[in-house]
Amino acid sequence: MKPDRKEKILELIGKYNISNQEELRNYLLMEGYDVTQSTVSKDMKALMLAKITGSDGKQYYKAVSSMVDMQKKFRNILRDGFLSMQTSGNMLVIKTVSGMAMAVASAIDNLNIGGIAGSIAGDDTIFAAIITGENPVVVEENIAKLIED
Image 1 (tube, rainbow, N blue to C red):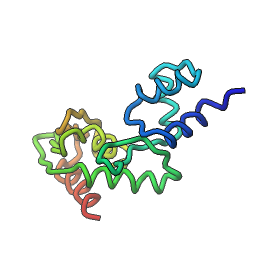
Image 2 (image 1 turned 180 degrees about the vertical axis):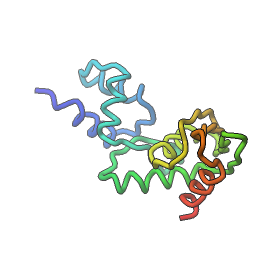
Image 3 (image 1 turned 30 degrees about the horizontal axis):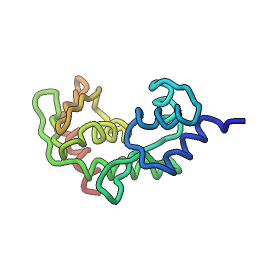
């Protein structure tokens, strides 16, 4: 009898340095789990997997044991990837280390910083839309506090 798919995911990320969902999906296929990328994404979210930086400097998925650990992880991602930010109208433009914009944008989303409607991330730039009526400078200050803590 095959182990539960989520158990297998935890086993695989513990055994291999898996850096993206497609790579995890391929390992699951090799283990006999015929899954779509969408299913893998849902499982990863349910398992609260996060990317950590390995000793080689690359990012890999690992399980985070609690929400407190998760919040700490998101703060670390924000600190590690952040370079600068400035407001432009109702937008906050955040510059990151190359390749870190998506991770930093995800960290910002998961840290539940008030005033942000949503964000779009490229390779090293994030555009965060500020909710109408919110003060972009206050949102910027709230992010800066998280980086400084």
